[in-house]
Every structure is written in C-alpha cells, then in structure tokens.
Amino acid sequence: MFGPGSIVGILGGGQLGKMLAVAASRLGLEVHIYAPEPDAIARSVAKFNTVAAYDDAASLTAFAKVCDVVTYEFENVPAQTAAIAGENSALRPGALALEVAQDRLTEKTFLRDKAGVPVIGFKDVKSVFDLKRAGKEFGWPIILKTRRFGYDGKGQVKVDSEAGAQAAFDSLSGDLIAEAFAPFAREVSIVAARGLSGDFAAYPLIENLHRNHILHTSTCPTHSDKGVAKDMAKSIMDALDYVGVMATEFFQMDDGSLIINEIAPRVHNSGHLTQNAGCTDQFEQHIRAICGRPLGGAVPAHITQMTNLIGDDVAGLPALEADPAANIHLYGKGAPRPGRKMGHVNRIIKD
Ligand SMILES: Nc1ncnc2c1ncn2[C@@H]1O[C@H](COP(=O)(O)OP(=O)(O)O)[C@@H](O)[C@H]1O
Ligand SMILES: [Mg+2]
Image (cartoon, rainbow, N blue to C red; front, side, top):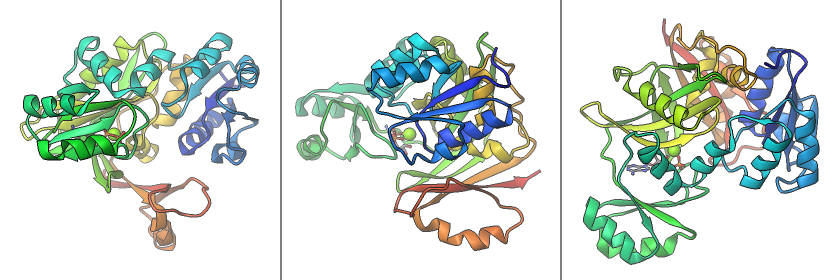
C-alpha cells in the first residue's frame, strides 16, 4: 500500500496524466512524469520529470526504479516500455491490458473468448476478398478499421456496399479489421475501478454524444440498464486481472441490449464528469486503486453533464466564467486547433 510521500510514475504527459497528477498530489503522493515532449502539459503539476523516448531503456529503467508504482495515461504504450516498467517497479494496470487494448482484433477476440461478453461481429481483413466476405456474412454496411492506433474515429471508414470495398481497402494502411454495423440507439460507457484485491466499484451508466467522431457531451446517470453493463465491465476487468480505472464503451440497441465497442485501459473522457458529481472522481479512484488503497465511493450525488471544449470552443470562456453552474477545467494547452481537446465543463443538471 502506497501512501503520502510515495512516488507515482505516469507514462504520458497529456491532460489525463495532468488530472491524475493533481489527484495524486491531493492524496499527498508525489508524481513523476515520463514523456518525450519537453513541454508536456502534465509536467506543470509534477515534482519529478523525465524527458526521454519511450524506447530509451536506460531512462525508463532509471525512472521506474525511483517510482513506487508506474501507470499510464494512454493505451499505445509500447510492449517493451511496459515490460521495462514492470521489471523495475509495479506496473498497474499490467501489460496484458495494454496488449489487449492496443489491437482491435486481439481486443475483440479476448472480450468474446476470455471475458465472455457480447462484441460486435468482426473479421480479420487481409484482402479485399476478406472484406467482401465480411459484407456477405454480416450484411452491408461494414465498418473497416485499422487494428492499431485509431482514435476519435480516425483510421476507420464505413463501406456501404461491395462496390466500395476496393476503395475503402486502399484508403487504410496497416492491419485491418471489419466490423458489422451496429444500429445503435445510443452510445454509453461504464467507468469502473478494480483494486489490488479484486474489489470493484463502477460509476453508473454514462451516455455519450459524439460530434465529428469526437466526444461532445457525457451525462451520468442515464437510462437504467439493470446493471448489465457494470457486470460486463467487471467480467472484463476480472479476466484482465486489472488494477486501476478502465472504461468500457457500449452500443445500446433500441431494446436496451448492449454490445461492447471497445475498452480503454485508463481514465476516460466520459468519466471527467465524476470530478463534480459529488463522489470520488475517476482520477483519485485510479490513484487509490494502483496504490493498493481502498476504493472511494462511486455513487454520484447529482446528475452531471460534461461538455468538451474543443478547438475554438475555448473562445466561449468569458461566458462560461459568468455562468455559476459551469465547473471549468482547462488543460493549459497552447493555441487551440480544430479537434484539439482544450478543456471541459461539468454541470450538475439535477440534484
Ligand atoms: N461497428 C460499428 N457500428 C456502428 N458505429 C460504429 C462502429 N464502430 C464505430 N462506430 C462509431 O464510430 C465511433 C468511433 O469508433 P471506435 O471504435 O470507438 O474508435 P475510436 O478509437 O476512434 O474511439 C464510435 O463511437 C461509433 O460512433
Ligand atoms: Mg471509441
């Protein structure tokens, strides 16, 4: 169990790392940021900083040795980086969560076969022939995605018919996966924590609205699903022997049934609303879990809504500052760029 004075290492220095660092600091812990960017925004709230590449074995080893526990704020931590961190410190969540979440084919196969949860129909695509076969089997449209490095809808195309298969295949590079199209009524997520001894705490179901494939608003709690989503998240986290906070994204159908889209082995944008929901927020919850401490309460006191501030949305700051209901969180990034997450606003919408 790590407490005040212990050092939490974070791989990555973006807004998630920054908010994790603030939460750790609130608990009396010290933070060490490891990232290649000298000006990573999380550095401003960390006592210790390493500027080095993720494949710099000597720097990684030195970093991990001085940290009591190492965690990460992004899922594309290279396997070798995770291995070195794990050999020289406690790596939480572990390497398996990274391996599974980094590759959509590995992920969906693991979720279906090891965690026993429902996933959308999928097929490994090595050729246009495979893609056309997926269309015949699942019906068109098909969503064709790169297996690795996709985010905010990047690295995926909708293929409406067999006639569009060749162009879609040619438009993406790297290993590919085809998915059946989910005719969902809404998108929802579960943000949950699992502690060192397998203890589990999930926030209620969160409803997510996207704009231009980027998360726009999240609201929690939303439509009841009778706890099914939480049970699925728990099955996944148990199968991964997970320690920390993890997000599970679902497609919810008209009849209320749920299909898992993907998991994120980290704190998640849809969980930012927990910062003002009147319970332990996801960042503190993650720090508690990885430090082997008891999990905090995950029952919100209010219905809370988060709205992302993307690109020029930050121009609306004066109006937000004049709004007493707006809890403003800015990340301290430089100039706004289209699609860049600059901050978010949390509002209690009902007590
Ligand atoms: N199989 C699918 N059927 C329908 N919509 C999908 C499917 N896969 C992805 N989408 C839509 O695209 C969005 C982004 O896809 P996702 O797989 O979550 O990738 P990312 O890593 O970019 O978040 C989803 O939130 C959903 O709106
Ligand atoms: Mg997603």
